[in-house]
Amino acid sequence: MTQIILQVDDATLLPALEKTLKLLKGVKVKTITELPNASTAKAIKDAKEGKVIRHKNSSDMFTSLNK
Image (cartoon, rainbow, N blue to C red):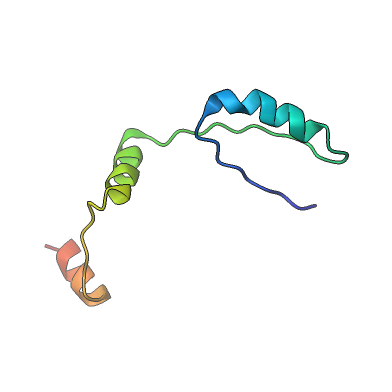
């Protein structure tokens, strides 16, 4: 069995997408909706906006984390 995971940002597309996929022989559709918690959502947003801390190497990163 092969699985494909689709990320759909516009939830209004889901009904039509599911209906279309179900027309294909041997295809089963399983909808999973998982929302990240607030701190994870903020971290994702920050990363997408480039609000990240960069280090030259892992040693510098760990030094920064241990402060």
